[in-house]
Image (cartoon, rainbow, N blue to C red; front, side, top):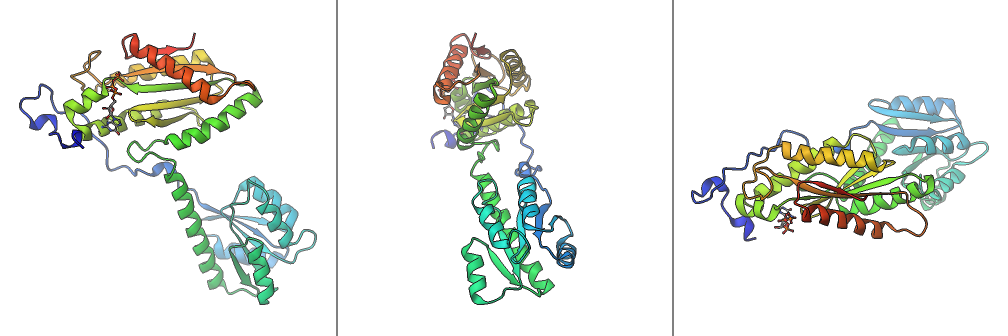
Length: 334
Ligand SMILES: Nc1nc2c(ncn2[C@@H]2O[C@H](COP(=O)(O)OP(=O)(O)OP(=O)(O)O)[C@@H](O)[C@H]2O)c(=O)[nH]1
């Protein structure tokens, strides 16, 4: 609270520093990271006419996948992980009821909403379908406008749900992933690296003398600096599975799966240099005229007896060393 109340440096003649030379580009869509892929709908129906009619009805701006029976439907559901499945009940071989049971018992497909489209239209049939986990039930012969409206409703709900899930994993200030995402991702990467016997490199990055930065330029300028540094580091990470997350206040964590020690150390050294080259004025830093970072890191190929919690503590010790040795540098596990 106290920090936030301070005047920006340029409004206080007694301050020795200039206004921080930071500009945030507010014209960019802050949630562009969420992507804008066309929605995918899987239609499982043994009647070709139904498949054709439904796909023509739902096609514009969506990706439609067609399956002519339950077995094909299940394999296409796994392959494409659609946003919605339209499912016929009475089909030769695997029935619609069996299909939905399989979908709901598999971790990879249980979240996909299913709408039954069926000629079995009694209240008992409908209740049974909904009890099996369907989100809606449309009777055949169907009315095109009703199908369109119900599909639209389910897709909207699905999109809102996804959006909320993603927002819960993103840090609102810096717009990179948050600590919660890190906790989930590191578990996954740790198991995958152990299984595949591949190296996992982890780095902790801390902004130097950030308390002085806040004191000098004000807390809001501090927020801007945090965002710029976070986004800058994110842009330096080139591979799709590399991740940066906000680990705590002015501290970030970087996960580099399948990355050897030498490569990780080189990447993080480049990042350290490039943050200083951003030339964000930091006149009260004892190591540079600009904002700098200290980085600690280590690489491991996890074994059964090691834990990611223990490993991150080691990484923290290398960050501590980087601070103790003068800041604005990388200390990597030898
Ligand atoms: N503006 C801003 N400041 C933050 C935020 N989160 C943490 N901080 C500040 O970051 C500062 C961290 O201070 P210290 O832990 O003393 O570290 P430091 O001043 O960077 O010193 P060294 O790490 O030793 O170089 C504190 O003053 C926090 O208030 C944030 O979201 N916004």
